[in-house]
Image 1 (cartoon, helix red, strand yellow):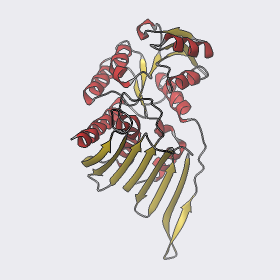
Image 2 (cartoon, rainbow, N blue to C red; image 1 turned 90 degrees about the vertical axis):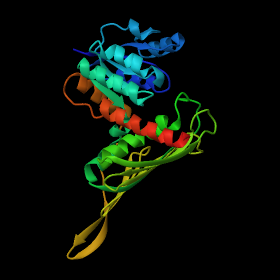
Image 3 (cartoon, one colour; image 1 turned 180 degrees about the vertical axis):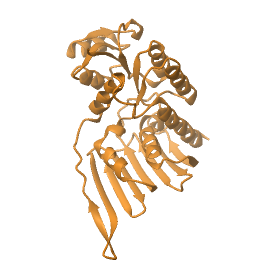
Image 4 (cartoon, rainbow, N blue to C red; image 1 turned 30 degrees about the vertical axis):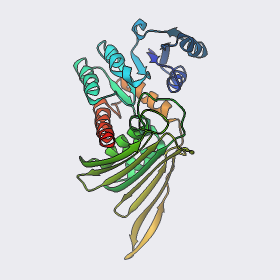
Length: 306
C-alpha cells in the first residue's frame, strides 16, 4: 500500500519535495498546501495532485513535509504529530529551543516519527567522510551564498550555518566547551554574514563561516585529525583526502581514493523518510539532534548580538 503524503509550503524548496514525492515508488502525493492558493494550484497541477490553502484540510495522510516558514514549524508539526502522522520538518526545526522542545515532546508523547531536513547527511561525499574519520582535531567550514532575498525571516546562522553546526557535532561527538562568534547585518535586518569558533571538550576546534551576501557560492568542509586530512566540496559532492601511512619503517603521505556516487541528496532524504514511515529504518537526523543544533545556533546569535 502506498504511503500517502502531503507537502506544506511549496516555495523554493517545498516545490522540490513535491516533485520528488510525486515520483517516488510506493508513495502517493495526495495534496500540496500553500498560503498562496495560486502557487498551490500551480504546483498541484504540475504534479497531478490537489491544492489546499489550509493544512488543517489535509485528510488521511501517513506523512507530511513541513516546508513552511520557520515561525510556523511548531504549530504545523505538532498538529500532525498529535494525530500520529509522521513529520519531516525542514531545518531549522523551529525558531527557538523552547519551540523545538515542544515539537520533540509532542513526537514522543504520541509516538510519531519526527525527522528534520539536515540534508547534508545525505550528501554522498559527507557519507564517505563519516565512515573514515575518527577523532577530528580541527574543522574549517565555509558555506557562502549569493543574496537571493529568500529566507529573510531568519538570520544566516539559522538559515545556512545550522547545516554545519549539525554536521560538525555529528563528526566530533563531544560536548561543546566554548563558543565565540561575530557577525553583521548588511542587506537585511538580520545577520547576513557570521563566523563562529566552537571549542569542544575533546580539544577539537571548529571554525564556521556562513554568508548569504557573497559573490560566489562556496560549500566546503576541511577536517584535520591525527595523520589525516579530508576536504569536502558539498556542491560538487567530491572528497579529497590524504593519510600518513607507515610502510617498512618509513612514513609516506598517501592519497585516499573515494568512489563517490553522486546523487540528489533531497531525493535520498525523502526515500529515507518513507522507509522510516514504513518502519524499515531509524531517523538519521531526529528531533533531538536538530534541537541541539538550534541550541548552538541560538548561542551563536546571542554572542553576536551581545
